[in-house]
Structures are given as structure tokens and as C-alpha cells.
Amino acid sequence: YIQLDDQGAIDLSEAYDDKIGEWDKTTIKYGYSDFPDGENNEKLSAILKEAFAKGAKYITDQDARPSAGLHPHAHLWDNGTAPNQELDRLMKIRRKILNDFSAKAIREGMPMSTIEEVLVPIYLLHRYQVDATSKVIGGMEYSYNLRGDFQSSNVMLESEWQMKAINSLLQTISVDNLRLPESLLGEISPRAFGYPRSRETFQSRTGPAFDYLAAVETAASVPFSFIFNADRFNRLMTFKARSADQPGVDKVLEAVVSAVWMNPSSDRLDRTIQKVVEMEMLKQLMRLAIHDIAYPEVAAKAYQSLDNIKTYAKGRSSRKTNEDGVYYQYVINEIDRIIDE
Image (cartoon, rainbow, N blue to C red; front, side, top):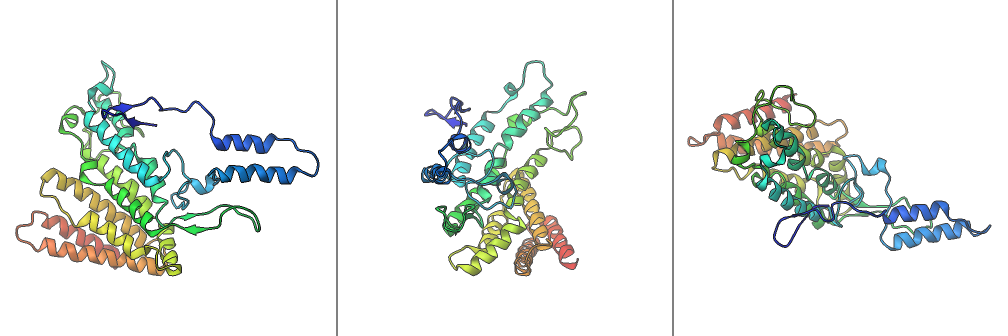
């Protein structure tokens, strides 16, 4: 658990807990208590009632792990009480670490190229919290309740909370959060002999050199892969059919497309980063449009969003002063390729 202290410095004083969790205590109490004959069911039920009354929840690993999960409080490796608020907090900490990141992160005498191995887990520090926050979108509070028992019923999450989660996820792919200091980029040398790339480094399209844009692409793929999950969009559609208060497919697609495509930067490096993000989003949206399990209405709306991006790209490519004309023509060609198939 990482914090910022009052002076804005990294605080690791509570990095690790030294106690067992509340649910561990409940499980041990439930599994090992011994009651007189005839009282077992009543007493065991009382243990669970007490735990749930304190706010404890139970969701299995098979429901907490998948990217299509929908319980807002069931995921691995996250902290906090609201997933999106914890993501916002973690992004501030990540930015602080990246701003201060330097060769001091590796030992004396190590190849400068090994800075990358230390950088990767910091650059992707938020990846598990992105997973957690995505489950708010098309999410539901639920329990494995039995007929006549005391557990809560299934409740769709409020639209406002879902849109806040979308906004938090979109902040993770903003240029400000993807940019790395030039001073750091200048320190990461090409891969030294005997230190090949591995699963602990970013893949590279630039040979031995550190591929800055590969890091950007990887970071962008994380939220988009969760946002555009086909099960999630099917839920957005069906939940909207059940309640007009739900955000639905249209609102989510509009928020993502607008945030990613409609504010091109005039700064050359920032614009390069934006293009990588745009293409990663486009790739995930295309996958949703042709996904085998996407309901026809979901696929139709995904195709509509692709058409909207195509119309925008046509408008941008036709401008004589637009330096991105060739890029936008490529976007148009990629969308046409998917539609033609």
C-alpha cells in the first residue's frame, strides 16, 4: 500500500499488512467452531450474519478474476473502498514516481538498459486497479444468496458511478499520464549483451533501443481491453433495456470516442503518443464489432462508432494544413477493411 506523505513524498510505512484479514477470521470461526447438537445451522448462520453486517462480502475467484467480472468490490490486488477513487489516487502516486525516476533505480555497475526492468512495473503500477475500476461499468452488486436467506439481492450500479469509472479509466490514457520525462528516456541505453528482452520488459519495434511507444501501447491496451469487453457491452445493453437510468452502450461509446479522438494535440511528441492510443482504441472497438458473442445491437452500435470515427478522419484528412492527413487516410482504410469483411 503506497501513499504520499504531507510533503508529497512516497510513503511505504504501510506497504504490507502484518495481520490476517477480517474474512480470514470469519472463515476460521465458521470452519472450526464446535456447537452442541441441534444448534449447528443456527450458530453458523449467525457467524455469517455478523460478518455481512460489518460489510464483509464473498465472491469466488472464478468470478473475481475474469475481465468480464461485474462485482464492483471483487477483484485481486486492489485497495480502497471505491475502485475508481483508488485508481485516481494511484495515478497521482505513479506520476510522482515517474517524474522522479532515474538511473538510481538500478544498482551501481548494472547496464543502463536494465532501467527498463524497473520501469515496467512502475509504468504499469495501476494495471490491477484498472481491472477493478472496469467492473463498475455494466456492474452489479450481488451475492450468492439463497431463497429466504439474509443476503442482499442483485442491484445494478448507479449510472453516475459507472460514468465516473469511465472518466477515471480514460485519465489513465491521457498524454500527461503516458508521457515519460526526456531526461529518463535519455538514460535508457539499448539492450546490453547478455540482457535480452523478456516478459519483464516491453516488446520493441525499434530493435535493441528502448521503444517508448511500445510502453504507451501496452499501457493503453490495458483499459481498452477491459472497457470493450463484449460481455460488458452486452450487459450495458440489457441493463439499459431494464432501466432507463442505466448509461447504456451509446453513452459509454460516446464518452470514450470523444475523449480519445476529438482533442488532437499540437505538440509533435504528444500527438505521436495520441496516435498510438487512438489506434489501440480503434483495434479494441473493431474487435467488439466483430466479436462472436456481441449481441447484434451492440455490434451495430460499435459499427456506428467506427463510422463516426471515419467521418471525423475524413474531415481531418481533407484539411490542407493538416500534417496528419496520411495518418487519417490510414484510419479510414482500416475501418473500411473491417466493414468490407
